[in-house]
Image (cartoon, rainbow, N blue to C red; front, side, top):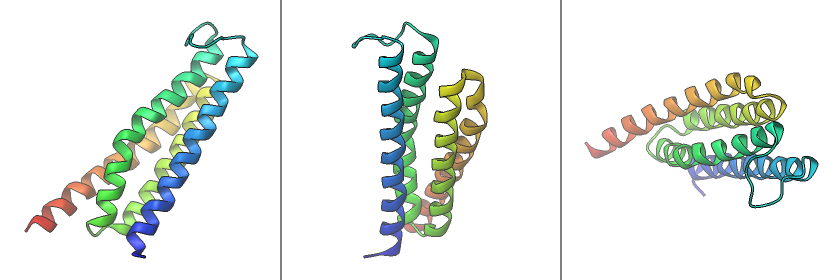
Length: 131
């Protein structure tokens, strides 16, 4: 199988693992703070876990396309490392947010910068492959 596909697939699997862990933290907080479904509020720590998970879901929708586009249009190595940085940033974000809302900034910044890098590489890759 093509290296670009395997690399992007590996990062995608890590993304799924991050989402799974974030989902588990929401479930744990729901039980710990007595938040019965479908409620999405009621205790600040539960709300932090919930928002960390939902924000990561929201970011994933934008992250995965640019990861794959950059990987498949000639920037496999850069896409792999920026994708790995995004994963590290999201883990930092989720764990930080689960401690305190104010502890999420560093992880957000790292994943945001990695996303911007992937977006730029994707745009360049698409442009280069159109000509």
